[in-house]
Length: 184
Image 1 (cartoon, rainbow, N blue to C red):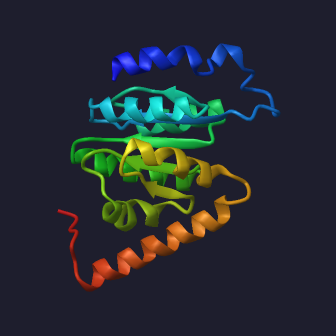
Image 2 (image 1 turned 180 degrees about the vertical axis):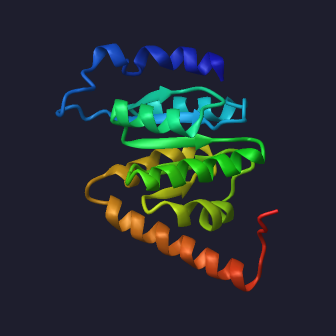
């Protein structure tokens, strides 16, 4: 992976080469962070490389990042998407906390959820209900590009949000009828 990234880096846009503060910039910004309590970032790096190779500007906050820092940096950098990563079970609660704080602040930045312990059902049952913005569970790095595209495209984002919210509502209803997921 490192050799492949080293080969691709010369062809990828660099932050210094572009004016990201310009309203005319078409390069979209994505903030990535492994949430507080978790030091695993291999998947986060892979997602970052895949997105960067598809002309997204990546702001990688690293590991063990608290909700407050994620949100403050997202606002300061005027990002288009926030991606949260986690590998261990406590990460799941931290992701809920980030989403809840984003809702409390009235944000509508799309939120991508990923990592080994994350799941579509957890995202539907625990994270989506606390955030009115777009929340999407991303199963692997290759899916991050089309998901990011739909979530921020002015033409598709509202329809995409409606589809995701409806799907997660269905998952919650199925889960209530036949619990597959518990909060324990």
